[in-house]
Every structure is written in structure tokens, then in C-alpha cells.
Length: 154
Image (tube, rainbow, N blue to C red):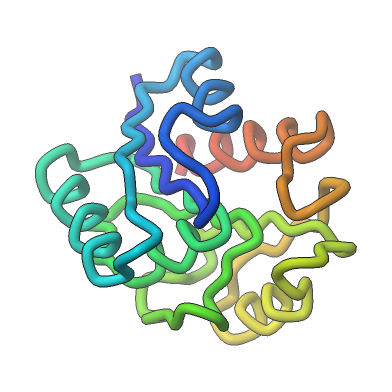
């Protein structure tokens, strides 16, 4: 069974719909609380979880996507959902052609153009999908599953 570290967004919490969906699809999902009050603690918690659990895939949503870009994934593949990397910063050394970025072209919280720029800088695969930043509509959820499945075969 593939192990996924799911890093939730700023206004989300562990046990959200995307993490539950991945669990229902048969993945072992690690979903720690990353505090919105401390960027430093969020990155530290994510890195400690990676170092101990060694996930196969890291899925980061919005701020969680920025967190995913600021840790050493230790070989885990990245799936970034509307990553807020421009707002929170990013170390792009682990983002490459094996990374999948999913983003709604009509996102009103994180600019789609930021993901276009990230893909252009790193060679990551950008897939437009979804109806909003929340990425919880059927199209977006299907795209998340497809991206995770693709990464799990690489």
C-alpha cells in the first residue's frame, strides 16, 4: 500500500474531504495538523513526518503545497494542488518533471499563472482542472486520484 503525506491548506484541518477520499481509494494517508499560526512549525512538522514515515507521495493543497516545496521529500513524488508558493515561498530544487500541479484556471485565491510559472521553471506537469480553489468538485477529485495514481507508478 502506497503511503501519502497530505498537507492541508491554511483554513483546512486534518481529516478533510481530499485526505478522506485518498484513504477510501486504498492509500495509507498521513494527515498531520500544520498550524496556520507558524510557517516554521508547519515546515518542521511536515519534515519530521517525512523523516519518520518515508511517504511515497506528498500531496500539498494551497499553503500545504508551499510547505511541500520547502521540505526534503526524501524521494517522495509531489502532487501540488493550487500551491501558494508565491505567497509563502518555495525551494524549487525538489520540484521537477515528476511533479504534478493541479490548479483551477478560475481560482480566485491563488493565481493560476503562479502554477504556470512554477511549471515553466521546473518542468512540472500542470493540469488545469476543478471549479474553484477548494478543488473539491468531481473533476478536481478525479484529477487528484489520477495524479496520485500516476505518481505511484513512477
